[in-house]
View 1 (tube, rainbow, N blue to C red):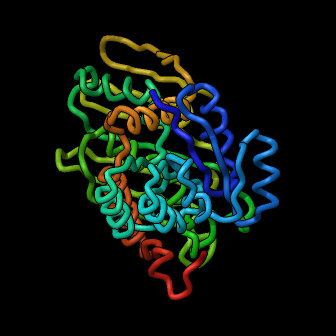
View 2: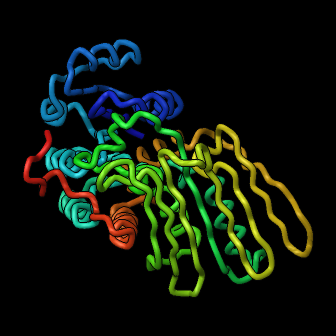
Length: 336
């Protein structure tokens, strides 16, 4: 396989876990360059993580022919703009979740990806870990019987309201950040696209949810519930429960199983707990990205899947009496 030289747009906190460390395990990938709004910060980041090239702007990085692909860990509201620019510059894109500000922007990104013929992948890393495949395998086996209900939560503590995840103009909100995971999980495990029946938000500021509960219904009759929070009484909660008419499965920490996880199945035939070994979810994700570029292997989290996820996020906001996040490109005062 050919070496994939990745440029990083922004010195975000997630970069070491999502790209730098996995690149040490994936021989065909190298973190070749970084650009940030503050070049001093980019230089310090590059020195710490041994990234050879630093650019003074995102555009300069995108214009470098030595860069094959980019990783975009920017604030949510900037994903669309810089994904499209990267594709137009001839770069493959690994874009952090949530993919876009809203479904309409996601469609524009998908169109740019299709026109470019390049790889466009949403960074739902958990989908690439063997735990996700095992969960789906148990459901598909019929062991739980007919699927009746799926519940999933992702609650994390973000205490500072100065955090960008509370910034409405940058696509902030619990549903956008934490909620994108349980929404994606319910869609993945059910294999269906849901209708949002009810949604209730608790706000951190006007328009910005710090917690969201949403009730979903799938075409087969299966129901679902997601809970997402950046600050609530559920300070830390990352789990899912899948119920069928013959049993149920519970999974603790479906998001980052490499840290710790527990899968439990209970049916009339008995009770068992499983542990699914493997590398870090980010390593699987980066390996899949490289294989898609070098071999044309389809990715699990493609642009069409991202559009569908954003449609559910938009619908949850509307059902909760809030507006979907506005694209930076559509904002009266676009952010750079």
